[in-house]
Image (tube, rainbow, N blue to C red; front, top):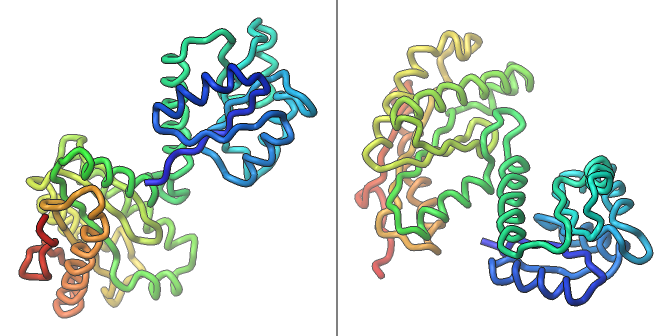
Length: 304
């Protein structure tokens, strides 16, 4: 995973050094701006996860930097933490009304500052990486969730769900109707994932009709069966236009067993092998299908 980037706009070298030390020790890549104009350039060049911004700076002050960024459609989602000696209520109100997302007054506690930064980045990334169709976490959040499980050494199963022949179906029914079907499918998957795990599943939306769920190995196959059954039982309500019954849900299940932090590509390969088999079964049998990856479907991950 790439390091999270933070632009630190602070003209005081001593304070900038403290901030850089606190954030660098927490694993962030800090980019220093000495004035407001440089802060704007760095944000536009690097698309950081957060801007730490002093108010009183040369050339362009922090309030103006905030107004410019928040009025720009490309950069308005960049979270801004104002860190300034102007700590009165009026100053805080002015900063927040300019568009800052949070405000800390100098002097400040480094541990509290680092915790505030971590919380803001976590919240911002969660909201930025959501599917506009389903409001589920998107591809970056899915990658992060799987990588976190690999890093922690937890064995989980990834469940890839997709609608067979959905693209040609969407061409017939149109964009609006196809999005409605994706939202209905999303609700079905989320409902069954919660019922299967008691609320402990992660469900994300890759785009189109592609979804990924991540859960413990003992619940993954159950989810797959429940979604297949739910889709087939509700087909007439989910996609009544599908009179030739060409749509089918195909599901691939693959475990992370034996994989390490850098083996996410191998997990993707396992899912790809299982999904290919699920699509073949669905095409041959004319109904939805799911396949659990086993070494017999493809070569196992390299040992060690």
